[in-house]
Image (cartoon, rainbow, N blue to C red; front, side, top):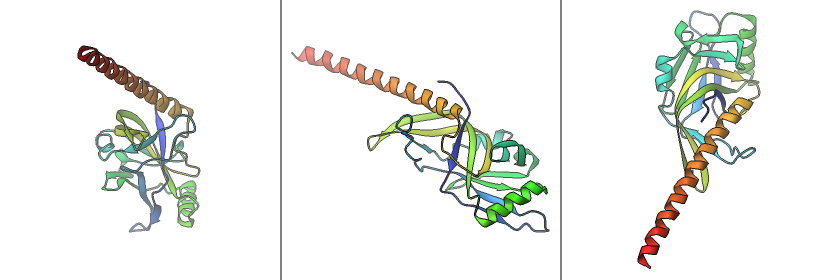
Length: 200
């Protein structure tokens, strides 16, 4: 399976700003991901859904250099965990984000847009390190068990798979899962026929 960077949107989470003690720009806060919540049907290319297991971000948050960006644009850095301007933590709900934005005009514009409700969603960029596949209620489910987190971003137009790279990466994983499933089914049929012939 090819390992390529993907992006996901947390479309059902809150994104808000709150006043900061001592003045300065408000803090941007919300959840960039929700645990054990199924994505929408990704059937526009191949039919499966996806969810994130609690603990998927833990190692990366402790280990990696992660940014908060505006619309995944590296030209607009809102915060960075190693600079202590980005706080990341797993809660019971999901990946909680607290961003201390810079005192710049574009950051002030963004916080105003969040206050007004014009920007309400977040997305995150990641690389899959561990995943599992299963069938639930007749649907193929991809579960992200562990990921390397690159960035979290308030976004204007979120999309669950919003880059060609993300689509290719998920498709590669899905193809591998389907091949393994077909091999297991063929082996099961072979053993079933073998025992049946012995009984005859």
